[in-house]
Structures are given as structure tokens and as C-alpha cells.
Amino acid sequence: QVQLVGSGGGLVQPGGSLKLSCAASGSIFSINSMGWYRQAPGKERELVAQITSDNRRNFGKSVKGRFTIARDNAKNTTYLQMNSLKPEDTAVYYCNANVQQTEYIFLEVWGQGTLVTVSS
Image (cartoon, rainbow, N blue to C red; front, side):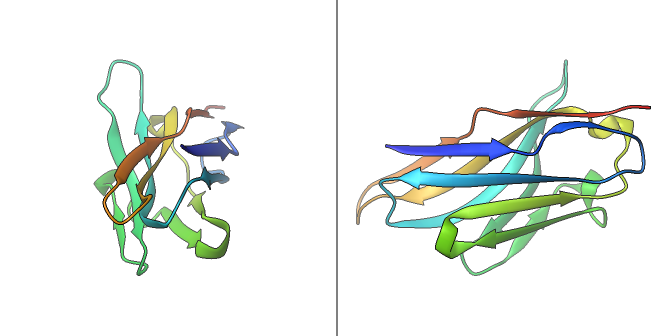
């Protein structure tokens, strides 16, 4: 079993910054990619940012230039630094990981979600 535990959400004013963390634990051989998706009320879940095991990064169009993503492979942890936040960034942010447990077992795992609210 693999678990993702996210933290760092909260209320921030427009233009402010927030940092999310997500740690993976459990039966893990390797983590191919880790990242964040978000879902706002009435909208579909969308990619925010993703980072692969060889540090290739992929960002959603609306956050490019404002958000950065990093990972600590030794800690199986990923970090999302969110700058210049806008009210439209308000959403529940979900951590995501593509995990290899054994030679033949691959899992996609989701965290429980953390709420980010951008409001004055």
C-alpha cells in the first residue's frame, strides 16, 4: 500500500505565495513522477505541475511562470511553490504519484486533497 500525505494549503491574499508539500510512504520501489492536480468547484480536475524521476517538469498553462515544482527523491517528497497567486487559483489541490512497487506492479496514487483559497 502507498499513501500520499499533502500539507501546506490555506488562505492567502492575491499576489501572495504558498508552498505545498506531499510525501509518499509505503511499499515503494521507485516513483516515476509526482505532481499536483487541482479541482475548483464546478470544474474538471486539471494538471498543475508534474516532475519526473529525471527532473523533467510539466506545467499547466495557467500556472506557467508563477509556480515551480521540485522533488526530494531521498524523502519521496515533492514541493509546489506557488507565487503571484490569483483568485482563480482557488481549488482543492491533489497530490499525485506514479509509483512502481515491484518489477511488474505500477500504481497511480492520489492524496486526500488540500484546499487553497486565494482571497482578500
